[in-house]
Amino acid sequence: MESNFFDRVYEVAALIPYGRVTSYGAIARFVGAANSARMVGYAMNASVNRPDIAAHRVVNRNGLLSGKHHFGGSTVMEDLLKSEGIKITNNQVQDFENVFWDPNLELNREDFVK
DNA sequence: TGGGTGACGAGTC
DNA sequence: CGACTCGCCACCC
Image 1: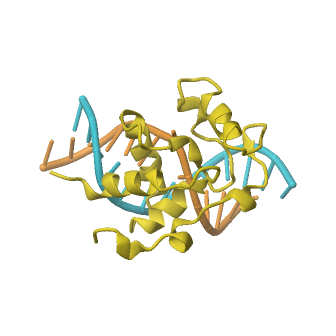
Image 2: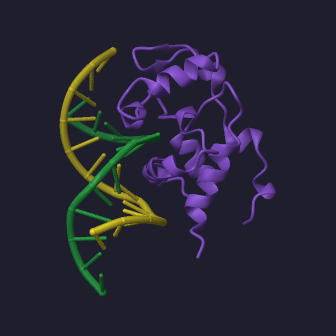
């Protein structure tokens, strides 16, 4: 069976543009679980098996690389973001507002299966 | 079946 | 301004 929740999270995560980041809460709202931002992170945790998912482009609402610790336990996440032109300082995304990508604004929910 | 878990978020002190 | 607490809810055991 298909767990639409996780699948949607994966879809959105896969659509995050290069050099941009988004927040768990933004994805959560987009998939219809505004109050389940934690589940987005949980889904990302399971997305390690999904090479198409750019989990490193997902940070918390503060622009903090909360999931970096889960990226092999190294600075992989930080390095990946830097390689995309995103500035990282003290585990925090610089110019977060500038690189923030809100699926609710940039993406059409109608393009997804309801 | 039930309960614990957690890569969050928002509110409070 | 910083640190802490609580609620959330889909997934795993």
